[in-house]
Amino acid sequence: MLDIARISKRFGTRQALDDVSFTVEPGEVFGFVGSNGAGKTTTMRIVLGVLTADAGDVRWKGRAVDADLRRRIGYMPEERGLYPRMRVGDQLRYLARLHGLPGALAAAAVARWTERLGVASRLGDEVQKLSLGNQQRVQLCAALVHDPEVLVLDEPFSGLDPTAVEVMSSVLRDKADAGVPVIFSSHQLDLVERLCDRIGIIAGGRMVAVGSVADLRERGGGAAVIDVEGPPAGWAASLPGVEVLDDDGACHTRLRLATGTDDQDVLRAALAAGPVHEFRRWRPPLTELYRDVVQAGPEQPEAVA
Image 1: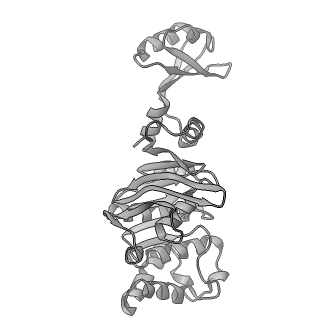
Image 2: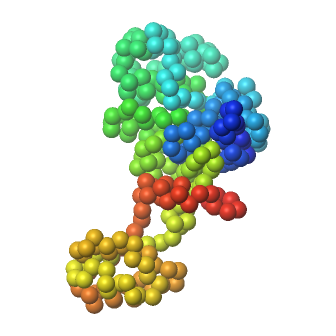
Image 3: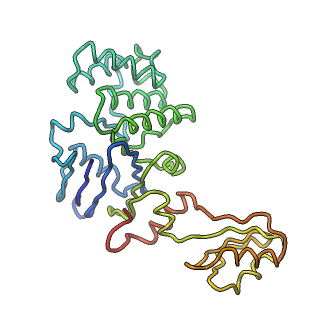
């Protein structure tokens, strides 16, 4: 287990991280989301040892992450971390050797990962001559080429076309299925929702929620969406245990049901008002959950776990 335990970091007068804690289990894909400046990259750099925390620590399998353990982490920075004038193949073999792979194994790993990620034909090209999407693929190759025990990826899907997104998604899922903890940050919340087992939301340097999408939905309470042909919201306004959240003025009404409210009673009231074309439990997407969680702030005494 990768354990980020109560880390804090200050830059001058700015508190970049404030008591940040979460874990990433072996075989888990963990999405780390937040606005620009929220603290995602600072957290990842502390995990990698690029920055030192003012307080707290990072542990892998119960052991403090030191220089030796960091060699076993695959890291992909948000900024391009490659030598622009160096050829792709030479660069990846060099990075594999830095992580301790002998020459033959390094060459085999480079061949395997560049083939998997669709850049095998560009081994002789300088990195600076590649498109941004292909540079991103090569950068992921660099994170994978030494067969890491942990993957830490900062905005790995940035600049990728839909085909490349699917390839990279399958690679991350395969690594997790092999037991590797995978943590990545992204602003593409639809992708995070689809790919991740759990999600951590950070705002203003503090973790405001950690859990699965189902956990975050539970935190926000349940809501039922009912489409009725007839009077829009009037039929629902007086029902006990029912709050009208949204009414489009035609036939679509969104309701929140209090705990213990029987949704079948609500359905019967809707049918009395007119034909019901749809009656389903509303499952808000991560984009809405993220907004609501950030506005609500951290749960007390602890975030969702």
